Image (tube, rainbow, N blue to C red):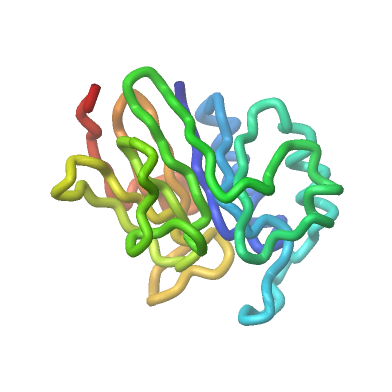
Length: 184
């Protein structure tokens, strides 16, 4: 299965359209959204291209292939508009031998790791991308943000295909990749 992971959209339609263009061109099977979908949040500036209604329409067209979790800027009113579940603090996605623990990062994060067994821990929230294998044998991936990257980083998302996890620039080029060995 080919999976694309994105986090911290914060209501910016043009950046989401760019990511979904890559998703379509490369024929991904599942879109995993790790929170902060529609709202830009009180600590951020208003993003250029903000269009929550446009994002709702675009994502609802793809509802059958989306797994999503709640971010700290997401609310029940957002769930009323989106036609896929997105209010859980985490989701577990299994692809063959790999268990992905998906969360936004404001509840579960590297300082508060989940006890649920997993192979790949994927989160967002900090807007700082990261991809590394840990001493415990799992992989940690922070998706960064497609709208508000921090720390001098560029906008990023991630993909998983054939055992390889990749952090990508908005044009799809690879910033870093990591091959995940089977843990089962």
